[in-house]
Amino acid sequence: MALDMKFFEEMEARIPKGKVRTRFAPSPTGYMHVGNLRTALYTWLIARHAGGTFILRIEDTDQGRLVEGAVDVIYKTMAECGLTHDEGPDVGGPVGPYIQTERRGLYGKYAELLVEKGAAYYCFCEKTESDEDSGNFVKEADPCRDLTAEEVAANLAAGKPYVIRQRIPAEGTTTFHDVSFGDITVENSTLDDQVLIKRDGLPTYNFANVVDDHLMGITHVVRGSEYLSSAPKYNLLYEAFGWDIPTYVHCSPVMRDQHNKMSKRHGDPSYEDLIAKGYLTNAVLNYVALLGWSPKGEIAEKEFFTLEELVDAFDIAGISKSPAIFDIVKLDYFNANYLRAMAPEDFAKVAEPYIRQSVKNPAIDAAKVAALLQARCEKLTEIPEKVDFFDELPDYSVEFFTNKKSKTNSEISLEMLQTVTPMLELIPDWNAETIHGSLVGLAEGLNVKNATLMWPVRIAAAGKLVTPGGAVEVCHILGREETVRRLKKGIEKLQNA
RNA sequence: GGCCCGUUGGUCAAGCGGUUAAGACGGCGGCCUCUCACGCCGCAAACAUGGGUUCGAUUCCCGUACGGGUCACCA
Image (tube, rainbow, N blue to C red; front, side, top):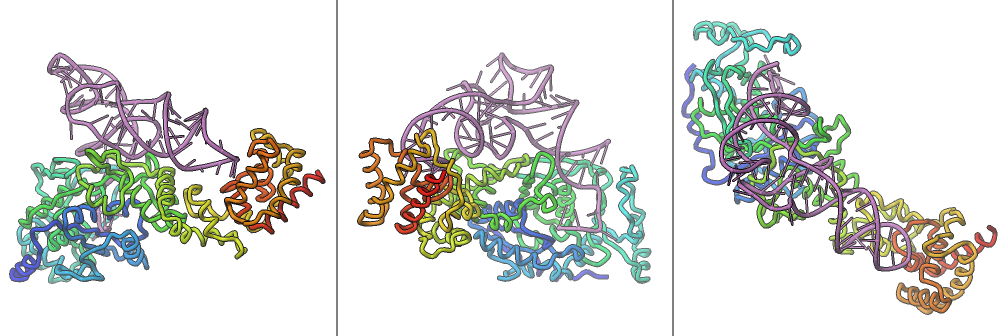
């Protein structure tokens, strides 16, 4: 079987040169986990920081594990996060196709090239169950390593099923370099003759990755540290092909705790879950960027970054080698800050649906309610329970009127409400300033501290111990009529107590 | 078990031979204040461990412990 060398030359000719090219290469087997998102972000940042090209490639060689809709989640997440790609299945590009199953014809040819070079061999052994529990950890030489060309040809002619394996040198060592982990050297004897082409004719991840990264001109391979131990085998492959070895950037995992990675199985949130839980995309990205990377130099203390600022600040040297535990409490902090940093009208816009979940009354101005909420919530999802009292006065206890710090009890509260209610019915304009002015003025006239008057008003108006905003804001939003109605109800409650 | 990697407060982390070992989250205390928040101020809290090397080690080397990864016709 003569190899078509022209084909290989043409493939080489397509490869863009000179610019940084990175790729995010997810397999569509699930959802965007936080770890995936972080890898995508770092990969994108490396390309953008260098003014290079970012590519999206779908690695779907495991036909058994494909999950329907997973590709759409990837597209949607990347788009929402602003991680735009320059080349990919949907936008095309010079080195496509960008879906591995659509490249299936390629891998066999490259595997044969390797066989020709002596760096790989046909293996006709029966598929065996992995003997992980056999206690046998000694590497055994595959008998097919030594098949003669005639024997191989005969087996192929007989239609015997086969895989193609990488021929790892029996002796010597292999060294590879990783940007954050440095040089790592391993004994070749500890490396196994990994399968390159599977029985179904599709390549394994390990082979497809090398071939595609080369053919797509990838300069920086960014991936999880779980691939660290297979990296030496990659180098051997690159060397056998005579290809330039890319820059490796291995990232340690995002953990849920000291012992486990984040995982769907443990109920850890995916990107989509976080959004559904009320987190802002920018807050998630900002937090995730800092989970395993930190800025150097003068900006070492900076912690709030826009995507643009990240592009500018990101450098590979800042990537951490050790695993990082995902701390949702710190994400809360970032989210709260992003919420507060929004323009009030923008916040009102995103908050309104949550406000309307519990406040159905159209007379209640959602924008005004939102203004109270902006500094008071870490997540949008905690809004409904905070503002439910605007819709309906809860059945509260008279005990609420007693508050030591405000110097109130039932008698004083009753007195305050009886005094303030008729006044509120008469003030000229129902706005925050006049309400505040008259309440403060009344307190002064009564010679009591503001709190002594404000407390019972707020309790009567809201029926809750804790409210977003004070008596003035609550009354203002409720409107004069409803406020007076509620205060009178409070008076009644106190009189009957 | 072999091989590889990692280890600074509860968490994220700065540090890259000489520092009172940053900063942030969280916790605690206080101030502000019409509740709660916001904001502001302050406090507690760390170099896994034993040997080297060195005038001097959190920083460099070796061992140990602990943790992670890998040893698939999965990625």
